[in-house]
Length: 203
Image (tube, rainbow, N blue to C red; front, side, top):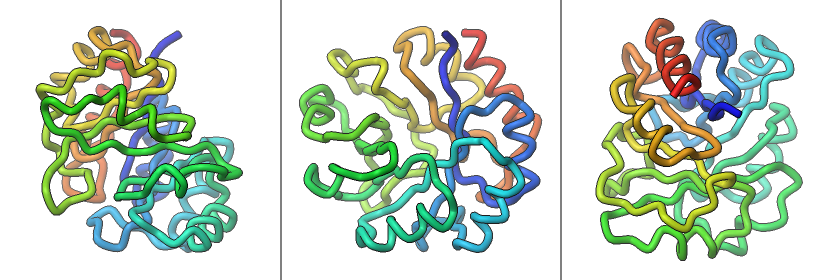
């Protein structure tokens, strides 16, 4: 079974349709107001309506639980992704599939950190101080040994040049990309999206 691909930071219906047409398995919608890829509920609903049946993942950063629940219900999210300093208690007992983003440094015990969270998946990303993710900085010097592959999304600066090697080495459940397939923050390069997905799924 080929790796799943999540195209994150989708901001327009046009980009959503292009990604799904190229074979994306999930689309990520960023609800953190500090992101250049931020979407509000109205735009998110328009995106959802443009790609019916496609699983949408809402990205949140230290958001109040009632806000996450309201947005997820109004947009029709399939999963919620926690990209801040949410603890294990916060991450448990949601009616949607859950993803906890782990912002990692070289030398971190990733398996132990991942085991703390009762989420369906963990997403490994590069820690950049002061930013919750989406930096495009490659994940380097981090040992993923011991993290169940079926639970793992790999992010952290993936690009056309690196995704196939990452998939071959790690064999994760999924890969996640935002800046690596963009013309500029919030606008996808459809050719890069298509090529990224092709390389990931044929690796």
